Image (cartoon, rainbow, N blue to C red; front, side, top):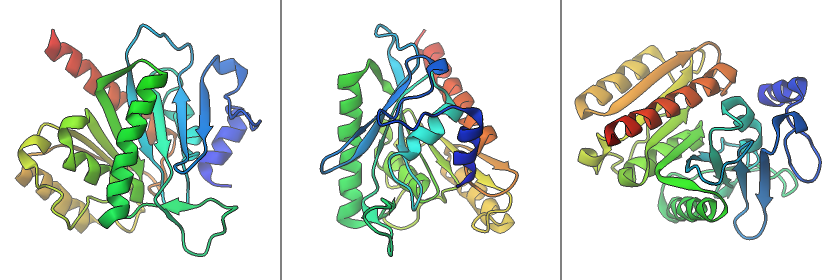
Length: 253
């Protein structure tokens, strides 16, 4: 059992019945799994207000996980502030069985293009089921899913209000900054663990230099331990997204 599973079990947050619904104390928040050719999970917030246009989080799970990771992370982000969706990764992890349902994301080629298309389809699916603000769609993910989220958002900066990568490195290859002028208007949140070998002092320094040279609106935060998204990191995800949402509202006034 990983740390997220343990925290949820201790807190009594998640019921494990077939409906994948949250504990009654959280009201009507619910996560629904969809089957078929492209499995996904759709999350509806507690005390859903149909007349309010919610921000949408599109979550790309980590390597060795699947779309159900969304069920684990939303209680630690917010049960009431967002609609959220999560597609399944494009490739099964090598050596795993069909029963385990462990997947990851390819960063190049047809599989990545298919993943992007699935993300756009899920955004429309969320809009059919819930009142979603099309100008407040946030793409987020952890480890390889975070890198994929960065690559997708930088390729389509006009379609997202912000992008978040938790423990996922900045993408390389395939010209991730090809749309640099538009990307400069895209808020970016990157978080990593102090003990994560992928984020050495030299790597972080190089990352900061890139952000400065490119003129990106990037926030880079370090947390204790490894890069597994824990309560503090996920709470800050909520705070950062709400800051972006509030800033958008202020500019519109």
